[in-house]
Image (cartoon, rainbow, N blue to C red; front, side):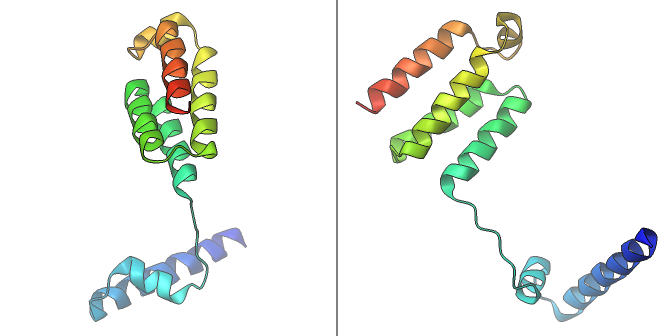
Length: 120
């Protein structure tokens, strides 16, 4: 049964793609236009998603830079929460793991202090 459903979804997707190519419309516009469902993500949610992505990739400095850019634009409670969760998460890492990502426990403390100054 699942295989049949999968094949039907695959056929539907291919048909939609072919129709989109023939009509010259953007694929996403066509699909979104047909589907009345929409997903809404706030800027703070997107920030959290991006920071977690960078953390998973070991790009801690990139995540921290993005965090501070957003805080400087908007000193919201949600950005403060994201910052505190970011540093709390990193504080659980070993110094060795942080070093592999070009970061340190000292930088965590400095980062928290910098966030604190921005919100004073």
